[in-house]
Image 1 (cartoon, helix red, strand yellow):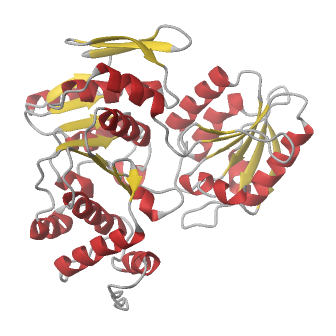
Image 2 (spheres, rainbow, N blue to C red; image 1 turned 180 degrees about the horizontal axis):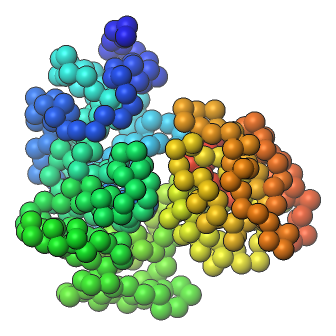
Image 3 (cartoon, helix red, strand yellow; image 1 turned 30 degrees about the horizontal axis):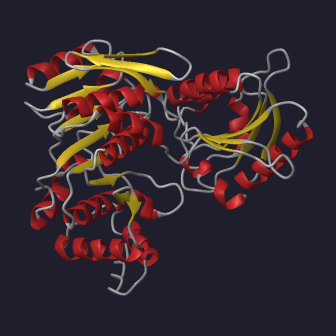
Length: 431
């Protein structure tokens, strides 16, 4: 393997990202030893900020956004690290809800490069260290860190969380986490710390992992056991735990289970949170690519819904949202996926809400072909769903779906784009 050339201090972000991609022989290398060593050299894990860490199969991004928005509404200064990004790398770090400049990211990369010596880091590990460095440069009240993969061996886990959250447990990343829910839950519970709060939004959290967590001295709070929520009207819901009861909360745009998990975490943290900040934050929370609705003009485009659902668990929730919010719409689904996902299970979960499939080839590493997706498409029942076609790109599939939707304009029609971050991330460039 040829040693890549270190970019200069004046090199742009793209040059640095290209360099990061060449540093390590594999894209994923589970383990904390290498990244921990570099972090210790720069003292990156030492902070006075209150640290929230979010793991889970699905729902991490929206939970992070709820935490961030509510804390900002309570006048706390926040730093956020998430992955992957949809459109540009700078989305991965937010300070007070705002992205940083490319130059600031380059400065962070240069600092990590100078400290790592001969230690090889993956793209994700390098980026994680850079994000921690960026947050340490500012006086922040809270860090909100999203786990990339699993939890126990994820690079983010070099930081001790004051409040650790697990949003959901589903079957995904089986090559790294296994195909057993108990084993996957064990990996995600690796972010829990003794004598600190852990909030679990998964209603069917494995009993064996619950017992092991309590035995470690973790302060565990589980949905349906220690905190509860329910919808009370078409526009409101309520939350309660042993110490709090919040009524007439506004129903948020993002998934409600993740809102309840975020509220439970905030209720148990050391930062006082006014109830009005919770109400305002719930109303304001938005996340690109998660139930993201874009209105069409009815002339050149029809309404579009973007959602990064890429496994059966997420697809089931997406269908529930479609049936609740758009019960009379015909749904034209533009789908592109990665080959290592549960394609059959995801398409089967989506099928009840889909009227026609538009399968797109993803020309990215691990991307699968439209024809492969079509092979897994559920058989039509009563003429629904139907295969509208296989396309060589997301652009072509989206264009055809929009064209067909315009022809059907006399009835409610929605173009759904889902299946991968890579699929959804291309849409803004097509409009």
